[in-house]
Length: 275
Image 1 (spheres, rainbow, N blue to C red):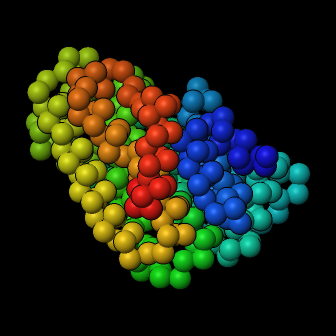
Image 2 (cartoon, rainbow, N blue to C red; image 1 turned 45 degrees about the vertical axis):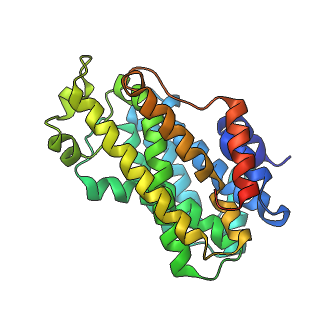
């Protein structure tokens, strides 16, 4: 098992399982991309102050920019090989790492445009890169599918982790959305929960479902091989269902899908070809 697959198995079981349904020739390369994302995403949990986190992120930015992976470790070596082999734009990785700095701080998400941009640079881009690795040449369709997939998956992830973010004083939700429901950063993070909190959750669930419907219509126009890169979408509706059924609880306790159900939804998504 490659370092990337081992990393996914430990840090991101959902994408590890999704990897098993990828075409064998692309599995290890896509695993390297996803494992890199999982490694960066966990940095805030490894540091007690933002600066050490920024140093870790800067190390990756320098590595990817230089292309020199000598003594950089097996995961970094695998990632650099994938970037070189598939000619993936290094700028997109730099944008991704720059966006991930937001995770280290407690700054508010300014507005909906910033929110969509954040999910585009941290979630959508990995769908697009996976499609490129799989050889997809319909770039406009792939970009559109990746954009909507990133919104659907990204919102579902944030909803599942709402409690954790609130506990750490982080607000990933756009300020204008909170304002529309008569909330701000302080009231959103307050221990007392109002009906307005639940209204925000409902709006996010609706938004994620809109993007899920849209991306499925696009995937119908893409070959089966490319669709396999989007298998994570099979977990979006189950997650939204859990959050919708436990809106109040989701603000105070993380929401997740039980492993047995997770396996089932991914298997069914792979069999149906449209997750």
